[in-house]
Length: 313
Image 1 (cartoon, rainbow, N blue to C red):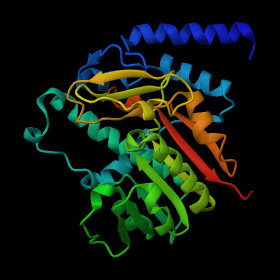
Image 2: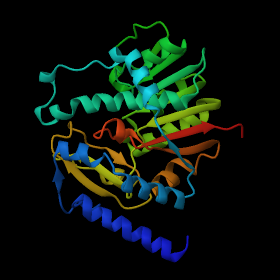
Image 3: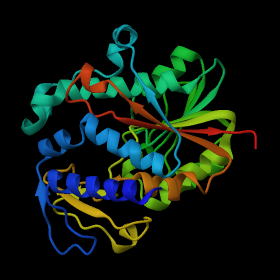
């Protein structure tokens, strides 16, 4: 990269750090915090922020493409499966995010629609939903495409699937790997960022091992920032081992009432390339920038989708 371009990117990165507010250093010397509503607003990146991240991704030689959601197709698809993600009772929603509950629901539909648009699912395929909890997404896909599905999530322990074509694996992906069959598609929705670093790498390794040729691993959203950033609950502390797992220093942001989470990792393009793309030569990676989710709902935060496709190498 020419020195003047490199200096410009460094300057822009510092600019955005100051605009986004204080960060603790990797040593944990300070403990700045934002509210949960501020966090939701913060991750709904502007076009300037997404452009910066794409520029950094290009600098790491990552393959980047734009994906524009066809709003008419999205509206029709959503109407066909509105019951898959029912509107919750307003009283069950914390008061501080009640005002964005509809946007969070739209976000989920956007993730599902974009995933299916990129997945190339065929009838009779075998698919897996990782970090699925009890999401209805897998059942929706199994019924629509007549495929076999695997739900992988430790929270499924003690539960039994009531769908004849869905199997539960109540394990971390690193443990579940040997129990999975060959897969045609693997999905993660709002779960990958909560994986420990070793589990992130295990997920890509499982894709390399278990995907059929042409099969795809799709992570939506793939949460990225200009610099590697860890979000965690105000009352939690990040372990030094987790912090040291990346390829660069980390920004820490504590979130008040952050669902009790002790780890949520937003990768930088550099960290993505070094840890999850370059070591896996049998997978072709594409970073999709979703160009118009904010036009569908200004508070939606789907900006990037990561797709790893098994090559015939």
